[in-house]
Length: 357
Figure 1 (spheres, helix red, strand yellow):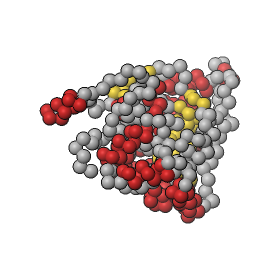
Figure 2 (tube, one colour; figure 1 turned 90 degrees about the horizontal axis):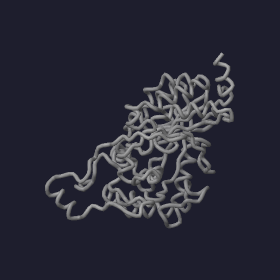
Figure 3 (cartoon, one colour; figure 1 turned 90 degrees about the vertical axis):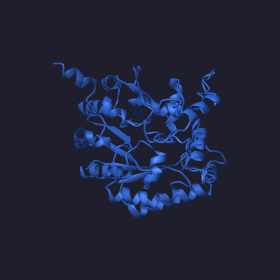
Figure 4 (cartoon, helix red, strand yellow; figure 1 turned 135 degrees about the vertical axis):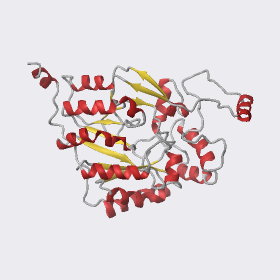
């Protein structure tokens, strides 16, 4: 890739308009040309951390094809910069763009641990697995500084409450002490995203994530401690990583994962524009092929929002991907299954009241 206009270290290459705003800021072409000639940056590439204080942090998930009932996200926006990320669209609800803003304007929910504890103490709350990172990665770089995820894990342990963690960052190993203790009570399951075994692909597809080597090491180290790990081979993007399904599943299994799941990419909302702009700059030689193959999985469009088929796709290419997934399960994950977490130990309202005496 020799594109001089390509922003290295970022996924999105543009900041498209927020669909909720009638007025937009536009950068004049003349100004862009002036900056280019004089070696000046049009905008800072630095990440900005913005404290926010929401009223709630645990969200009900009502989608019939998402295998979780509740999620929570200590951070909104994600510096990992994965170009395909479905969560990009949610940044528009906060007044930002789904493009570069999603990677650079990170909202930090500093009261997340307090809100979580409040939720778990509610008299009406019945224990259900709450998934950290249902939207944005709880172990993204911001976590090194703010440690909100660790604080939340301490609360899950305190109240003996089940928790799932989704991440593609080896930073999760920092909290191995808490994760081990939660696992002793069967209160935690970890899902590690593994999208490609090719570092060149990983660097442009997911620019600020942990390397493939570190992710496989993370799966192995967690598994060695008898912590259940599911490998998330998602999304599968035809023409980019679809040929890696068997190798990804094999590597995940050999490093100790006990299950895996895969989904086909769908480019909903602003992500279609962002991904198209990115691939024409990052992979110009194969851009049309990849975009056409993605569209062939979704009825000729880059996205299909119908429940039940949006993550599995339709058509011949989608079928080939699903068949490859079934073959991978038979080869590397036969007679293995991710366990259900323990919901019977929750120390809720009554226990909190008793501990006052």
